[in-house]
Length: 300
Picture 1 (spheres, rainbow, N blue to C red):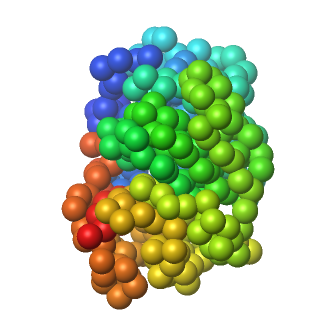
Picture 2: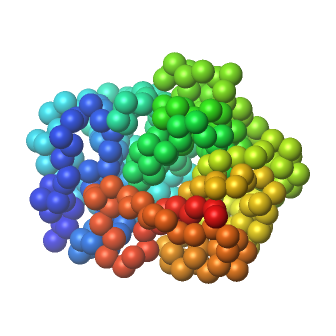
């Protein structure tokens, strides 16, 4: 039986189809036999991501059903994430590899078919909304900045300054372009290609910071192992964070619960206290509690 044909019954259709968003999230095991698939609406592209192989016939039936709900769609593409290179296949419509998408009032560059990730993690939408709301007048440190989505949100919210740190100069270059795309003042934004774990003295010189955003990859060969490396950051917070500062700590490791962060903070930074928890958008149904965690801590 083709389980994919049931997906249109579970779609979270956008109220505003000008906005980029996930419309189906099976990875949270909330839908039987559909844990291997997600679908994103990136106007005007539907991106199906498969984490396990499916037959050509099943995929085509899904495409036909999706197009009924998205008559504005110009391209349907499928990323095969179970393959090493994460190959992207054009299923219907025109070739489209470069996009500018809209999330709330901000625009971001998206690339399809070149890298395993598109350039913006849609599950962090609520996190970016929080940053925009609480960054006014803040000196912001954005670790593992990637393409600087949080930085764009912080500047949109009136941040005094943002320092973006990442090991990828290519990602930071896209981040710089994202700021330009939103006509933001680059004089207030810095971009530094650094190995964070070898650069604490540099962060100390650049501080003090009022808001830390820390969204590390779970495991990145040769650079990040979240279990070993998160503590290295947390035990040094007081070297570069200001009194009364705020932390946004993110965790996207299915095998680790929020207690991983709570226990580390109690051990290594007990002058910070949990004040809030940001949930991902409602489409991210998580049956087993293994999804994204975003915890907010306040010093003092």
